[in-house]
Length: 139
Length: 139
DNA sequence: CATATTTCCTTCCATTCTACTCGGGAATGC
DNA sequence: GCATTCCCGAGTAGAATGGAAGGAAATATG
Image 1: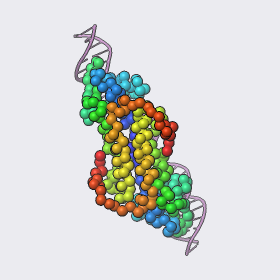
Image 2: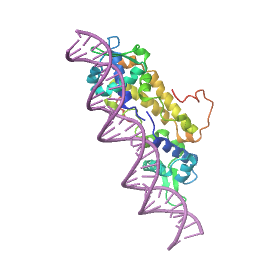
Image 3: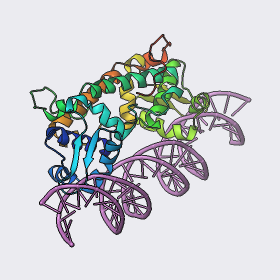
């Protein structure tokens, strides 16, 4: 029940591009350095993002990547789907027995709802606020 | 973002035990046969369920496994947690940048909510009902 | 007591996935 | 021309997945 570094780092890339939306192409080198990640690895992640049309690229010196549309029009679900595949807690959900099938579909819908309603704009503009469970990481 | 066969088959075991709750110990052989699963593999899954106290075992002929408490007192979250570890979409959520951290916590809470509110009794007594999205497995 | 059944426990194994690294080619700005 | 940057494919160590196998210990039944 995990999202791998593909989805995590990929989202990090997209948030960085959202923060600098409208400022021309951003090189991966900068994103990698700012977030202390491997540039070569990020290259592999940005490739499907470009193929899916979420980002555009400019080659050569002073090139880089940029979002292909405004941050409020890209949801975190869009990003996760490209990098992690369809949002679903189990493979072959249609082969599961009805009780389990319903459970997996409920989970899928709950996750989908969160991801669908969180845009890159939300993530880029995020300001921390008071919360009771800020310290509760394991449940 | 997947639940592995550990959690899936483990839940299947628990649902079978819930269906036959109060009827004495149920051998794994029967559960494996009924669900067309490998008995040797189920053995490995039921072991942590026993260690965690969710099921009790009776050895020897006419032995088997049974729930240690009524099905309505065991949630699917209890089962998944034992077999898949803590319910969380990413490892080390506390090290994530605040925007992502909030997103992962929202997903975690959404999943937790579904799993917490679905008991083994619910799953064992499940009757299919009309639903609009019964055919929508990929989203 | 003998035997069949069933849990219990450890070890092993093939395959796949993860999280990268590496090398080189092709654009592009200066 | 040269540095920069995207683009693309291959390779790789380690972990996880999904089991199989073997044998020991407990128990009901005859």
